[in-house]
Length: 307
Length: 226
Image (cartoon, rainbow over all chains, first blue to last red):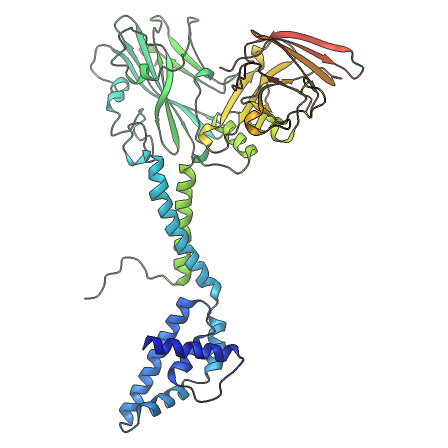
């Protein structure tokens, strides 16, 4: 049956290409073919054809029901006649069914599928699934004002949250914020601890912006740390290990001051400043950040009575 | 049984809008995944400035567009800078920016503070080597480390710079380029492909006017990137 329809279609197409506008009697198939041929977007053409075909069949069935003695061919002829001039219908349908909307729809489908495939394949190969929760330093937003993620950062939280450890001398939730170049730079927390033989200060800073494509960064070499007693704390490069393992210092005791990542997300970057050998007499510590003149400055009062 | 519908049935237009919104969202995620690359080096440079909390600087050198002088092997065409780099001039500092050809995470920005340079003329080493393109195939091309000099005295038309390395003295010259700076390209005799081998070396800079009169002689050490 399909083969037969295909042959018929080819014949009609050939006839149409030769410029023939058949005036002879059309059967149902020919009528449908001609009427829907003006619709250029194929899925639309098929849908309209199905609808008209159902309509034609209904008419035939009605005729056969009203006139039971009527032959199948006669019923089809009458039904086709009642549908109107196929060429006129074709003109009207072509006018209504603009192809570009259909093409745009198809294109949007293809693009959506391609984008999904790209994300699933290349995205996973790149290993950039940080926000899915398998990275202790990434989260969508810094909900707890603490370095690391709210779920996995409990080891770091211990330093900043007030507790009953006698070695914890101070735990402050500061929240000083400065606005620089569209970025909010803020000093979120500070914690002063008594180490074995020296005082250690932890500071948690956050840079955030809604413009995720230019999420801010802090550079260790631009951070200057001083106190009221004239001490200057040098931040040494590459102390990430010393910082993240603060509870478990290397055997050689080589824990230097430094700046390290303290969590990140699409809209924020967290940093931790770790200072060793904080002067016990120091009343405040000052952070100046910038390549030359400070772009941002924060002061942390270290004496509890000053808060 | 009647099928439950949780979402309204969309027409053709609605489906197109829905699909395009979905595509835009996914494209945004993909763009973010690749580090939000921007189409031009200038835009990348500005973004790097904002990421580093710096105010916008004045762009004084765009290496993709210039040819540098090169004193040795006279008679052969001078080398062209092929690596895209930008030099910006801030209030009391300069920023050098190198755009990685493929990855935004590889982009580099260095800031050179003028406060740390005592002389009148400020030196800014570029971040990446530049290629000596004199009629050689790529593997045989020489890489040069480049140093820009800024804030030249008025009337300067030409400069000479010597750098004292362990293997000997390098001497290069440069005409004053647009924005009043000179750019010296040093080709290492040790086949060093590192762009920073001149950093930390003692230098002598001589600047001349159109009549060939010496306007300024300055000595010091080529600044080292922190």
